[in-house]
Image (tube, rainbow, N blue to C red; front, side, top):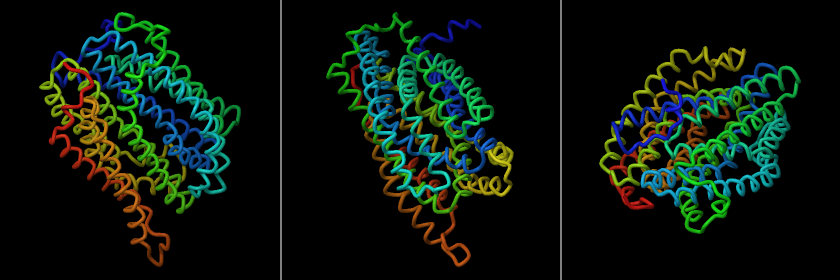
Length: 460
């Protein structure tokens, strides 16, 4: 095998669509698995060496971190769309200015989060009814993560640029290096130096700086595709405006999702530390099962962007259909494995059998919904690649806010009995399952309506 070939950008405007999508998705999937290991290893280390309360603390901080990251998520989506379309159209100068604009906007977003993140952490945790037994750990974890957000922000944006250029392999390699470093540092800081929850936060941000630096170095080597010049770091209105126009709906979508998770976390916290810990375990495993959906969705964005930039709409529709079917099959297999071996996997996080059993019961509720998530992510990825980021945003608002939030509280309230005066916590996961199913139906309908086909930022 020619290893050098693996690092070359992939032109997805030629060749068999399914093969191109799957080939591009595999490194992204492996990379997403590695990225998920960041949080999972944090949970395993603190759960094993500090205790279940520390596990609950790290997990409770997650929704707030995700909310603060919406700026990066928006820039990343806008960058992927613009880079892939300009790459498909072979527009060198426009591509160069887009990359430079991404770097500058990421630096600005990082400074904003470094300022407001630590200030808002404890007030938000109090608002969420975070138990006093874990709130100090949560606060220290969030403060460290936000002060070191520059590394994670730049990795997310620059790896998005690399994917837009068709290079998902480099992002994978750099993330694997950072993940290995994160695991080693987690063990050293927590198990050896007894730094507790703050130790896993320090391990995470140090590893993220390494992956960001490697991505930036890789981009400086791609001079055959675009130019890295100082003048391109000064954002032009056209490119920064397009990034914001394309990125804001995706950022809003992520913000809505994170806000809904925060509100649901407030409901989750009312059931006590054990259910909070069970929720953390379920969400960690859920994160892995979701990875094929997110990976295929991102691959679809790049695939659609490159082919629309090249004026090949027939390839877009063909790839959307076949790629979604493949993604659904992958998700079905992973779901079956989780159901068969779920308790063994949950035993990695904790030695408490009651906690393992509770987590597994919650996971069984979600299992049938993962195929629906594949449909949503793949077809929404096509829409975003075409430049239509508004439709996924509205679908998210309807399902995550108008439906899931009231439904979660309603189902819990209706399940209250004399023996369970607070209600049945399983209803929280039932509401999520309904949310996923409705989202898939709405996405399929809007994809077939086809308004996304007229949203390209450039002509073929």
